[in-house]
Length: 518
Image (cartoon, rainbow, N blue to C red; front, side, top):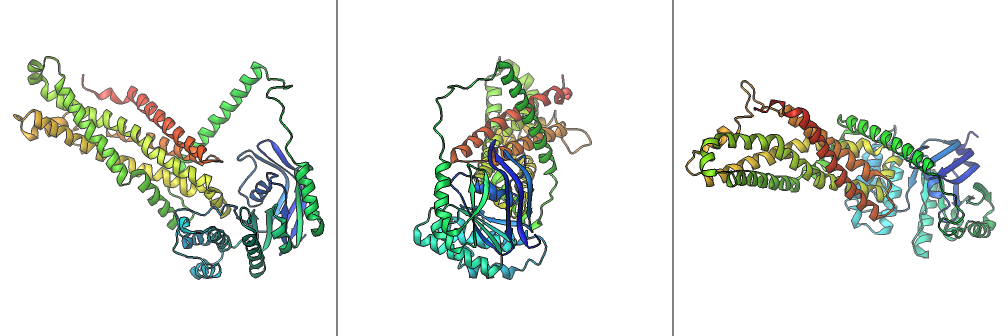
């Protein structure tokens, strides 16, 4: 149909192995306001995300067959708003406007939407009431200007009076902005009066069917009763367990899939080194945000403190527990200072500093991305035509590439100076220049400003940094259904980031130290 905003033909939709639709057909004409009714858990949200292009076949356990055609892009207003928590109301709307495909990006549009929905433009998301959050989500989607608007349970959790107000607002937006509107909800009382048509998602029949408005409530009750979950049988009862060979085969297949995912993730991390943001302004903003998170003042204090401790402990205990100190120290003092310089620069500061970064900065990034995922921000970016990794992964990777050498340099300088203070205190008879001269003796290269092994040092630091960045991002970006899963992602990021760093330094040790004087 030429005036169809949405055309669905023979659609089979499943999520995580559960079939939601099988052979479903539906046509929604341009300008219609359609209520998509169905029981809780019937797959309405999955269906809307599929229409919006957020869920694609093969991603997140989603599988589709059949035909889906949307005239233009569909914008979605999420149930929990999914606003960008770090931005103001105005910047949430500006993000959508800046990524609007084609057409002028007039800043006056932002002011108009803020006025239309009576929003406090400068307020941060955490300062908004529930109603303001919902209106901000609608304004942000309108700034993107999609021809189709999708609402996911817009009246969920509201009292009756507020539900009616939200329903009126949806209809007013539909009429004044000339959109095609699809509202997914099981709240017929508030939303039925504003709908032109009612479509029921029947999870038992796995289909979409249009019903008369006056019959909608009775039919939905029937569908809800038919979709009631069956009582689970006792664990293991009547179930044929797979053989050991089948279980081993499944484990091999899963391991291969994980290996393939890891390889793809590694390539994405490498690609993210080169900045390619959809919009330069937002790219720089995300890099700045993650640079503060990864290598901000608290990270400088954290790594700087570790450098001071490394310098103090290495120097103090080297001289304190030197065997037969009264005889050997006068003979070995030059070599001991040189060895301390070599060890701090090539081994101690890089290794300990990288482990600490995996714990501190890797955990912080995993928490940030995990919370964004849990709050729906990643889906919100996709609904606005932005692949999250173009900003988030790129910002994380580039902040580690910039921040790690900086932090390690600070840690090393403080370790060297802490060692000097200890040496000066324990060896007052030596000139101050003695320490600095002999400290770099094994590192200095005639005719070069770079110390010996700097290439190896930079290589292992950057490989470790890229590994921490990728691990923390991808563990954080996995789907999250609870705060517990966010915490689990942080823990896993710290553990696997640390293991990765140790492995990198272990492998480098086989090749790096061929130039050590014998």
